[in-house]
Length: 171
Image (cartoon, rainbow, N blue to C red; front, side):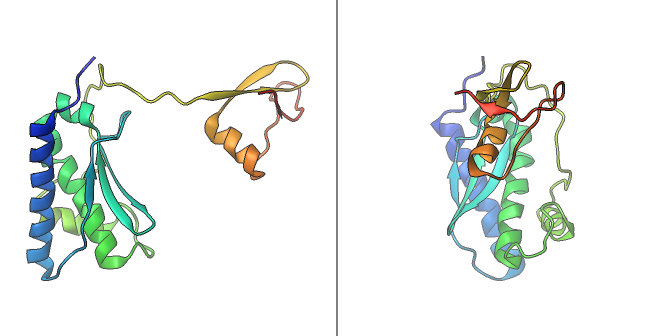
């Protein structure tokens, strides 16, 4: 198992993030609000720009950065900062996540506007989604938390593919 990046490398990622925000200030001639940087992302995603209420944050995966530090410094960091800049410029109206506005920011950063990477992620811890037990007329099913939450909110219901009866929560 790979160990996550340490404080020194986290600081370097923060500096690189700040560099691209500063670069955007110079390119667009305006200030941008603060963006928090966290290293709490798990699974197969290297980075994520997220808005919760008025808080803007960039989340990085410290395990993927540990395995491919330079690649993520030059690829993931500008990618996520570009999402932040597009959000600040266009306020997430009808803008596509990797649309032409985002691609333009990436090109201004002299970064590859490609969306995904193809790296070996063996040794990277992956998030396992919890399952919940449901029953139909013929057997017990293990339903993902996503589907379970839809049932709990009343926005989804599921039937068995074999007997077509409604799945009922067992617990």
